Every structure is written in C-alpha cells, then in structure tokens.
Image 1: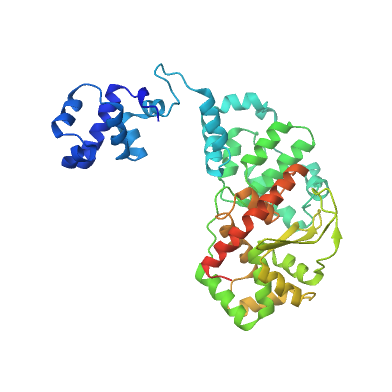
Image 2 (image 1 turned 120 degrees about the vertical axis):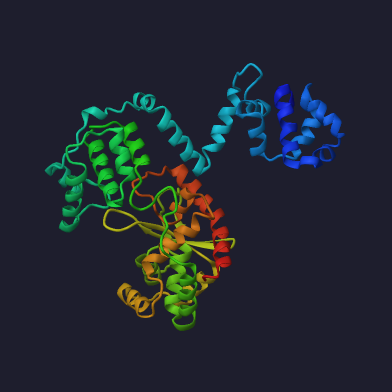
Length: 413
C-alpha cells in the first residue's frame, strides 16, 4: 500500500476508525499516549509508521469506509494524487478478474448495464432490422438444419411452436427481448430462442459478433452460471449409496460411475457393456492415436467417444481407481436402463437421472465450471479448438482428484 498517497484527512480518518473501534484501548493498541492520539485527531498529519499500525487494526471494509473509495484506490496505487488512473494496474486487475467466473460475470453485467449503446455499436447489433417469425423454413431448420440435437418428434415441435407463438412471435430482436428471455421462468423458452438465434446466423441475418454474444448471454436449458437449487438432499444420496453397496453391488457400480464422471445412466451402462481398455482410438483434439483407457495418478479416464447428432455426447468418463478395478472385474455386462430406474423407485432411492445433477452440483465446487462442463461433456454448441481441447483435458486431469477427495468427505461413495 502506498501510504504517501493518503492525505492528512484520510490519515486522521484511519486513526478515528481505530478509536471508534477500540475505544479506550486504541492508544495502547497504537503504541502512543492518549494525548498524542488526540493531538493527531485534532490536526496535523500522522506519520507513516503510525498509520501502518492503525491499518493493521482495521479490515479492508473498515479502511474503505474510513477514507472513502478514492483515497483507498490512491493508497493501493491505482489512482495518483492528481486523480490519474494507473492503466497498467487496472488492466492487470481486469485480466486477473476475467479468470474468475463470478468476477467475469460481474464485469459483463456492469458493462451491459452501463455501456449498452457502446456495446451495440461495437458489436454491430442490428436489433431493429430483425423480427421473430415462426416459419416453415425455421421448422425445417429444427428438423434437419441443426448440426446436432435435431428436433425430430412432433410433440417437441408442437411444444416449441406454442412457446414461440405465445412469447416471441412478431417481436423485434432488442435488448429488452434478450433480457426478457434470460429472466423468463421457462428454461425451454431460452432453448427455443437459442435455436432461433442459430437459425438467424445460418441465414446470415445476424453477424458472428451478435451471434456469439447472444449465445453467451442467453443460457441454455442445460446449465446456468450459478448452480441451480436441485432438490437433492445429501442424506438421500448417502442412503442410496449405502443401500446399493449393501444390497446390489452391480447397481452400486453403475451409480459410482455416474457420480464420479457426472455421466448419464445410458452412458454408464454403455461403458459397462463395451469396456475395451486396450483399444487404440483416434480422439478429436489429440494428434496421435491413444488407448481408450488412460490411468493417471489417483484417477483414470476412459474415452467413450459418443458424439454426433443422433446421440447425447459423452467423450470421456472419469473414474476413481477403485471404480476402475470394479469395472475391470465386472465388464462386459449388459444392464437395462429401465430395470435400474425401476429398482431405484421400488426402494425409494435417488433416481439415476438425479445423480448427474448431484455430480454437477458437487463438481463445480471443486473445479472451474468450464472444466466441469468438459468432464461431463456439457459442451452444447461450443466449438473447442485443438489447442484448447488439450488444455481442458490437462486441467480436468489435474482437477479431478480434488473432486474425488471432496466426494469422499461427503460420505456418499
């Protein structure tokens, strides 16, 4: 902290904050007689060593409250005595903040709230020229035009059409509409809106900057920036795993795979049925062929490799060493999805579909969200470059043992 940047008033305010906080004990804590403290409080500029001792007695919030935000920034070297901002420090702080998910979102929200018009001009957002219409062309795009997750059932199309007609039909693409969709109670409306944004981009009705911005701002129905409050009680999860461990070891293994890897039931069962650890495969994003199974220090990962428009994606399944050994002794084996779910219902256990949600809730507390999405193959419409793919793979390998340790502390496995 640059104490020289503090004015006399700010220095006296710091001493005053200590006096208010400690009362009669302030002089002793500061190492000066009471009359000397009174003298500084009534006039003059307290010396640096005294101010430094006083700061040791205050927390950051008390310091800012005492001197005000401008003086605090000056003391931190961000603003000089003439009010000039040190750009290099601010830019470094922004770069550091951008690595934190919460601060990154705070920066985006602040920018959107205070510089909307500047953002619109910068991104070339032609809001007024786009009006939302459900057309046969858009419906065909949903059926056949999407690269993945095509809408193939008439029931889903009808539901999408009804949502669109009720909430979006005829509306102009404006900031207000985007805010409305983001805040809407229906997660499916956000999904329909994202589909329409993709459709507009494919037809070149909007540019890549606007497309990228909207796909980032409007969350898909799969996940949000904040952990959603799923009604999953930890004691129910612990009871489920304890019951399965004692009564059905094979289903216990299935649940362990789902919890550790954050995978769907269908993918856990696919792993059990097709487990082939020595098979050499070519993995997108990795330049050389590798075995499906990789064993690291304190973890393992298996390349299931399910991608494409006809299936829900599952690239890697991360496992603990214990689960891997159980898998080796059990696989290959075919188990019915319906039977597992029926068994869980019959014994009042946590349903399989909730285990992936539970894993997500626990996982985002142990690793960055982008890494958690990679582990669970929650990539949505994102495109990951080869360089970034290898980065995420390495980051996931580093973070996963910490997730296993966090799970062990809950008592679930």
